[in-house]
Length: 301
Image (cartoon, rainbow, N blue to C red; front, side, top):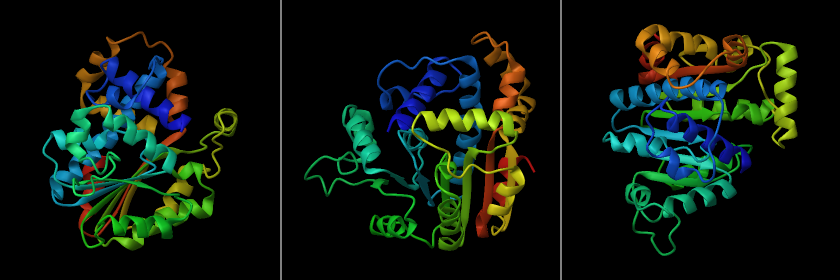
C-alpha cells in the first residue's frame, strides 16, 4: 500500500510542477506530494511514454480492452475517458489497494460518474456498472486472476493492451514469467506495455535493491540485463526493449521545445545522476497479431 501511495504522490508532484497534464492525479493522492527534479523528470518520461502507448492503442482499436496489472492508484482510465475512449478497462491489484482506491474514488463525484457506483465499491449498486472494472487479486496466482477477469467480462477475442508498470520486478522470476506468458497465450491480438527495473550496473543496482528492501518491497525478480528482458518477451510476434535513458532522449529529440519547457520548471543540475538512474529502468513494447504495428509506432521504428 505504501508503494502505491508514494507512486501516486510522485505522479501528483509531476503534474503539480507542470511536467505533465493530469487533472486526476491530485484526486487519487492524499497528503504532501513534494519531490525532486530527478524524480519529476523520471516520471515525466514514464508518463509520456506509457500515455502515448495507451492512446496509440485506443486509436487503432477503439473498441478494444485494457488490462492494467498492479495498477495501484493510477488515473489513466479517467484521462482516457476524458478523450472519449470507449475501451473496457480492467485494473487488478491487492484487495488492500483496491479498497483504498475505491475510497478515493467515492470522495470525488467526477471519478464516480466515470466508473459507476459498483466499481466505486458502493454497497447495493450492482446495476450501476460502466466500462471500468476494479478487481482484487494476487498476481502470483495468474490462474485465479484470469478467472476473476473473465467473470468481470474480459474477452480474449478482443484486441487487448496489457499494462505492467513496476510489477514484474516485485515477483520472483517464475511468477513474473507466468504473467508474461498469460498475456501472450490468452490473447491473439495483444500489446504489452511494461515499465520495470533492470540491473544495468551491479554497484548502483545494489543501492537500488537495498533501498527497496528497506522499504519492505524487495525486488525479487529485477532483470539482470536488457538481454534478459528481450528473452522474457521472446514469444511475441514483435518487441522493442530499451532503457529509459534512451526513451527520455528520444522524447526530447522528437520535440526540442520540450527540453526548453521542462528546463524552465525547476532547477535541474545533476544530468549524470539522472542518466544513471534512468539506465536502471526499461520500457518494453511487445505484441502479437493485429497489435504488432503498435510496436514500431510507439518505439519510433
